Length: 253
Length: 350
Image (cartoon, rainbow over all chains, first blue to last red; front, side):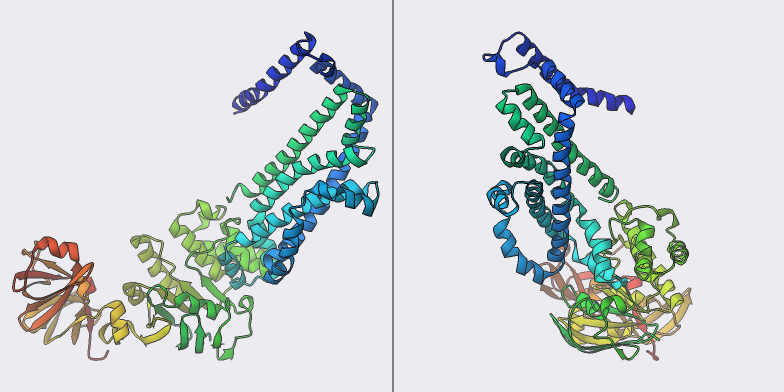
């Protein structure tokens, strides 16, 4: 079993190693026109090491991470709570749905100018952007998840003596988990994409801000380091929720 | 005491339904698809709004919500919670009623034992067979010690043998627990096997209520349209053979019928339970009678014909393709076979 796993992992890693090797060779042999803008992988790795040891990368990464975690968790919780109310109560759904349908299509970054004026340029701004970006999709997935729960399960729980709150917490929510996790998985990655844009435009710390500084100093290696960190974070967040979903629902689905 | 009384109940197709189910009784609600059977159960369970009044133990329960009515409900689709294992499904009602943990454990174990599903306790619904799911759903419905049990076509998705076995088991359990039960089905033979009384629901109205034999021998027009109008033969002589079998003479034909009593006043059989043959059927001559075809009525998928045997005229119903394959015409000589288990008898007392 372990051997199979290692073998599988090797197959997944091989294309990456080949890609990195080609990159290194092309950059070292100056095969690319304008090679000044294209540092070899080893130089990027050295810069990564330097940035890590000096604490620059860690500091900026931590700023971004905290913003993502706060924005994403508050946005998700709010989306989940309002989603539960809308999914369970038809009146609430009818009242809120038109308003939310109107606001939902606005891209999260479209809010930036307005939020800059409302909150000023500070810590609240990126958190608010991520809140908005997480809130709507999770709300919609929760509403859909709840609406999709077979009414008969609710009837069964009711005849067994469960109150509305018990039905929501013990039947409706567990059965909506697959839908909710679809939202969480997609939005966890999206939060990182949005934070970078917000930091690039308006904030002085964070991975996005570091990239903008690197751009003005023409430090391609630092930009690539930041992009790699970003790629890894998007992927790990998505994978984390996929893992959690599997753990919670795989047995019964 | 757990009697149910329905007074002027109306909802969707159900119109002005009045019905009483006695304490500890097993009443079968018989009706075709769309007759309003499930609607009526949902009304009794308090799951949907309705007009009229529902009384349980002579107490009006119209304002009592479903979760407070103490009714066990076995749904047609069973509705086992897919995210909970068998034990947790059975324990669900006890958990939401905030029973102590050790009591829940004991009750679940007892129910697993009664339903003979101890070995399934950690399985999830998707890992169970149809019959196993049935047992789990029944255990779950019984866990809260409900005063009334509603069963909505519970055997529908099961094969004949499993459903027959489970029906017998359920009947014994129902008697043992003495729980007032409404059992919904669209199958007359299932109804007859289970019921103390049958209530026939047709297009949202109660057409007839009575014992299975009353319904079978004296169906109202709407009921006979649904279950079929039986051939009824008057018995002149009878004598007991053995093991619940009696031989009866009805005019010039002699039949062997199964009967719990020793006497038979009338014998009845539905037209679809008589087989028709253009040749002498093989096997012993019991319940195989020679006759003459005197009438043929064809519909789109079935043929209803009349066979005369001495003084008796019997109606026979069979699929059109089988009838056509025999190439029969009026006045032809035919053989009919009356299925032993489908022959019903009544005595003077009934």
